[in-house]
Image (cartoon, rainbow, N blue to C red; front, side, top):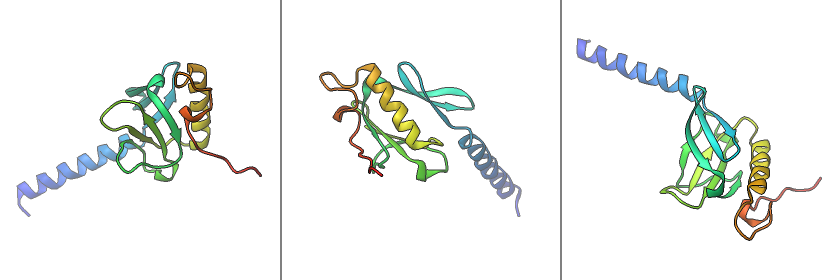
Length: 129
């Protein structure tokens, strides 16, 4: 094994290790005016509440992803603006996160002219037990 091959292998291992360590620290917070993505406890990405069109548990084919390895916890936030309109995150409690975000959107006024909890904040329906 040459020295160059060994250096390349060590570099790839270091990048993989950093990725695995940081992806485990991704967290999400609903603030007074935005949804924040936290990496190592610091906000690295924000989506303003007034830019959110809908939120649900469905996925999206083309999206901006700030996901952890728990892809089954996917929550899709549909934005009104931006290159990628769909924003996918994976909170630990996806159903609770969707409900809290819908409440925050209702308090923020949601879309102009629409009632809180109406079509502007998602179209997911729950089955009654």
